[in-house]
Every structure is written in structure tokens, then in C-alpha cells.
Image (tube, rainbow, N blue to C red; front, top):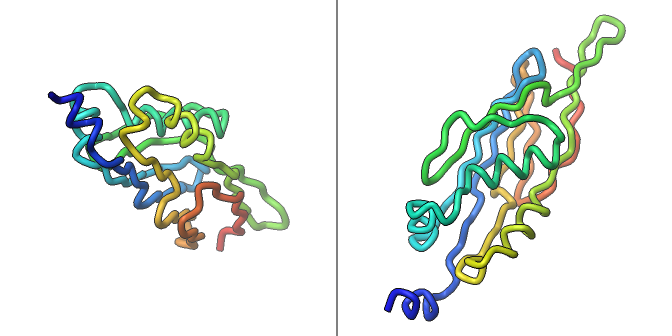
Length: 155
């Protein structure tokens, strides 16, 4: 009966809402990824069939070639830390931080290969991505699955 119910249900959506990257003075990042899960997806997470925090961690590690540590995860968000996320350079008494470019496109495609993929619709392009530098400067991106490198001279 449950299988029949899942078979006739419309595809549910895993939707990225907000990605917030906050840099400290050493270039380390605290990343907060907010998302919405449908009822079906919440059941899958509860039953340990799917693990959004693990998918996001893996996507970032594969994309950035850096260790990513999950510090908090719940049904609507995951928070991770990424050491040495931004490169720091000094020139003429000024300091410039440069973040790497990264994308969730490969993770989105990988999720589509899972056996339960037909039950959901995945959108890993956050409605809003915010990168905040230690001096308060922010780079903002709307509905982008790939985020470009950002270079900023610290005031």
C-alpha cells in the first residue's frame, strides 16, 4: 500500500533556500546551507534512506578538495566548517582574500542517480548565496548552482 502511495504521489522537491558563507580573518569558513524538504523527503531522512548533510558535505569536499566538517544538521539546514577556504595574500600593506569557485551541479546530478530519485525533484541552486568577508563586505548571488571565485581587499 505504501509503495502504491509513493508511486502515485507527484514528485516532491528538495529546494536549496540560502547558502551563507562567513569568513574569519584566517580564511576559514563557516557555511550555513538552508533547505526545504518535502514530507516524503523528511520521511526518507528519518528512515536514514537519505542524508542531506552528508550529500552537501561530500559535494563541497569533492568540489573544493578540502576537508569539510559538519558541525550541525537538522531537517532544514546543515552547518559546516571549511578550514583555509579563502586564500589570503599580502601586497603593499593590504590584504586580499580570494574564495574558490564551486558548484553543486555534480551533486545534483549524482542525487538523480539514486533509486529514490524519481520520488523527488532536486534544486541545489540556493535562492540566495551570501559570502561575507571579515570586514563586512558581502558578495551576493541569486539562484546560481555555480558560485564564482570572489576576490576582496580587506578594508
